[in-house]
Length: 112
Length: 113
Image (cartoon, rainbow over all chains, first blue to last red; front, side, top):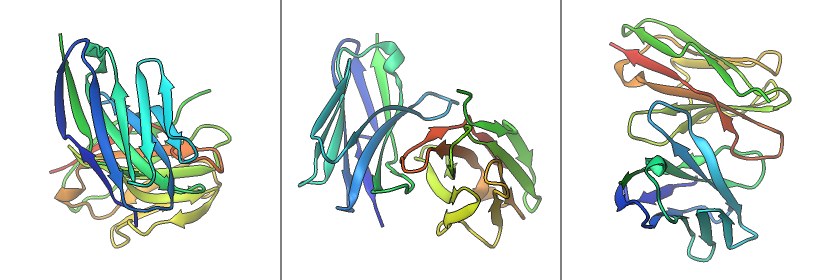
């Protein structure tokens, strides 16, 4: 089955700097890669996703890149703000209506 | 649209007791997932329903966990008997047929003492 590795487990950045979180996956059949943000005590919320037919997707300060050959994808947050502080999870899923396999999460702290 | 509703929000039980969680998905969402999220980890799938049928329950500890979605809408997840290691947040998510991922509910935080 699919296995998703996520790095780093913790990340601290100064406000205004960029943050990058990286994930690798094992199943070459996976073609859907979402990123979730989870604030303390709250539900995971989808912030951006990418499908395997594109290499990059951007939404304001957030971007995701995908390298299918290397089986890795990354989340990029630019101009970080204190409210970006949360745990971020990457996930992967094969085609169709199948469940997600999550990474272990990255705790991002943005220091004002 | 209304979100995924879950109850109760919190539950504390003693080991070997039973507990049940309830989920009401977003209207029109045929797919429903139950995930277990242990502190410090990502959500792990327990079971996936498509309408009222089970699609994937390979990671559900069937000796103690059970789940049903009788009318293809609401779902319940039960643990009987509970163990200390079942302490976690139980998240329900739903999605439209053919789409992956889904929208999560707020979860039920279970503490087994």
